[in-house]
Length: 197
Image 1 (tube, rainbow, N blue to C red):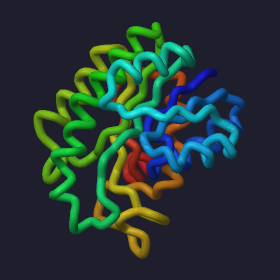
Image 2: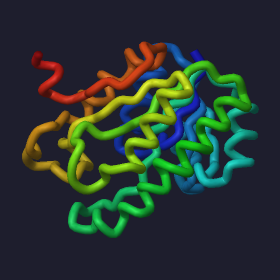
Image 3: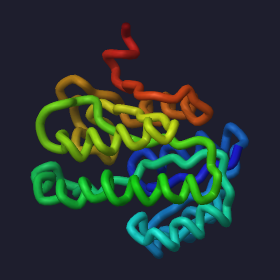
Image 4: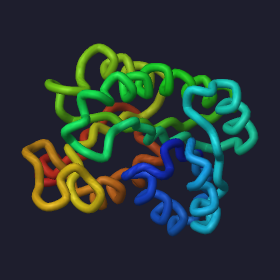
């Protein structure tokens, strides 16, 4: 399968890349950071230098690769939890304009599959109409939404101890994402709680 991974150098993207390659997929890995391009190339993927807000370049990149599925793991979040409130408007723009641009690119390239990251908690920071519109637009386009619990583990906000529920270890989240690359379509929850039931 050919996979276009947007957000390839994020916390989930970096964990998905080796899993995708191990499963024999060809991966185009998108980043907006020029200094990360060579690392992606060295990892064995096709690096794509592009910003999710540059609609025309994004469409051209997706059309050039002709993927079977686009995986939307783009976020704009801080490294420190106490700065989260300052970044929410930027992350909301990713969920609105960024998602819209990726869906437009999928349509332009006749890409049949689309998978997008979301969150499992439904109240508090980062929730509300923009999140709902993000999920609804993906589902309306025939895509898949994965609602992840709060990530914990290396390089997360919760490195030393797990956060409250809903939660999921970041490595487990990546492993549980790969079966959804080929469907099914709809909204699914990826948390420790749902795995236990």
